[in-house]
Length: 236
Ligand SMILES: Nc1ncnc2c1ncn2[C@@H]1O[C@H](COP(=O)(O)OP(=O)(O)OP(=O)(O)O)[C@@H](O)[C@H]1O
Image (cartoon, rainbow, N blue to C red; front, side, top):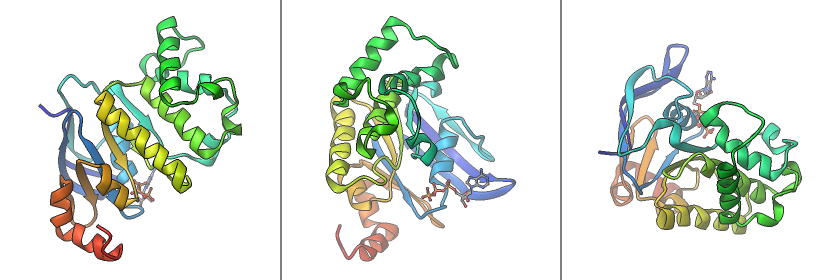
């Protein structure tokens, strides 16, 4: 059974549908990139998968041992988040809050896992620094370590490289690739970077007037894929 199955989903706000009749599934170890124009509903879909919004129609089913609260989430960065006055350690530990609600203390085991994730992200030397004093790339590593505290199975990443320079972007992509390949973590990523999506993803979900879901190869051969290839100057 798939880890995540979305069946005939319709999503929207105040009775108006933004996405209609969307079906797709994600298996353990997949790397799914969600692409589509601004405002097409990608973040809305992610929030619905996380249970933060209810679909207007359809259902979301988790399986293969995944429970919905075991999904790690790296949200799109907002200006307010960038200025958050807390230490790196505190931000990473807050990844456990989803499990038990807000609380002022953490167990020894949680502190150990948080430090493991800090090490995995290569930010040990930053652990006592204030989050808002870090560079954009360092902040994204902190948020990835935080998301990992919530899961060992599936990460949802909303534009994780937005605003990062090309070198830091490449570092971020290889960190995510290593989580997928070496730790077996399923990745669902929203991205505007089609060439990176086609480099790393096993599957593509293209949200547009015409919905597409399939393997990377199927996408390359699809009408949507060919149209995007022309827009990108035939780069893929
Ligand atoms: N809370 C809300 N209430 C009403 N409409 C909303 C709300 N949040 C988003 N929308 C609208 O829903 C549509 C989809 O928004 P969403 O943020 O999901 O798109 P997106 O594909 O993630 O966009 P982007 O690529 O710009 O991040 C947009 O037209 C947006 O204005």
